[in-house]
Length: 212
Image (tube, rainbow, N blue to C red; front, side, top):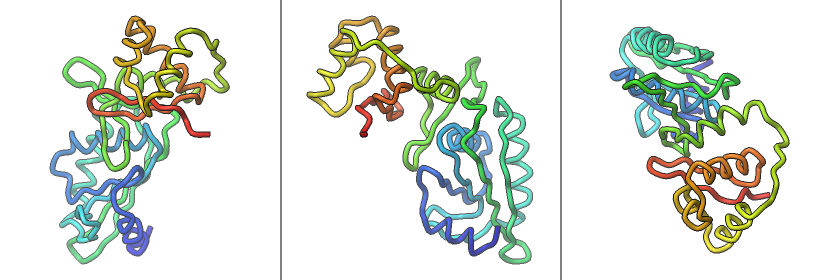
């Protein structure tokens, strides 16, 4: 990878597939971005790039690469595959580029505070994956052409979505008068069947009809 290619990537701005970091000051936080990229749709992490997309570089960027590689290896489970490049800008400054594919081993996660925590990418943000999103990640890499019975639960959901663009698990559970775990399973199944789309959120995920 060349400096011109890095500059071209940086000009796109942060988004679903691109994250900028000026330096690796807090590797325990940056690994969340790594997990999110690999769990969602792959992409690039650029170290030595400012928030505005300026490729200013980082002094002794190889030290940042060493710290981040160590954090990725020790903190993320299962082990994640990636490529990385170091491109010099001056004698002492450079930029590091990490490339992650959409991982066949997803969901990747951190083990923190006695529990597994996974993350996904939503536009230019990284959010923690809910139980439903975790299940969608896990099952979505294996199951194809999922068939479901269109019954009363699904009818009530479609009726609710005819009156609003999105619905949360809590709202669906209430309008359909379903226990939360049954409402959850129904929403997950319909996402896997490509009927619904999930939009992960920090608080409550949003579910909407998938556009044809």
